[in-house]
Image (cartoon, rainbow, N blue to C red):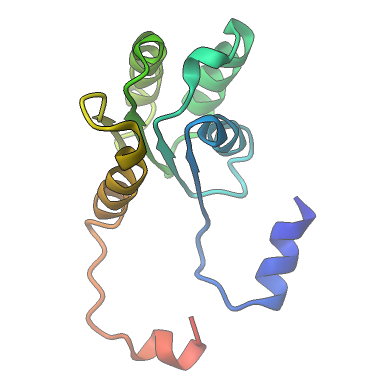
Length: 144
């Protein structure tokens, strides 16, 4: 992940890193979040295609998240593919015991394409709910 170091050195970015993914890209984002806890402090995983992954992938993700989720935030939504519910429930079980900074949302009754927008908005509201910025001057001075 040399590119992440390059970005941090050459651009003025916030002191935390989120990863986001939707549908099949959400599987990759979830794997990166689970397996590289040193790089990502939060993840927004919207309607992942969990049913496309094999059992070994699920086992590895569940264990990695359980071990590496402390002090990290996760938003994960369920889309409307019927085969995902079982995996979503299992993931929720593993993660809920490891972190209180996780939000799971069932968007299965929503239109598949609208879940990308709904999920992202809901995730940002949940993940940053306790953040109260009253003085934006520090951000302006540091060009963030």
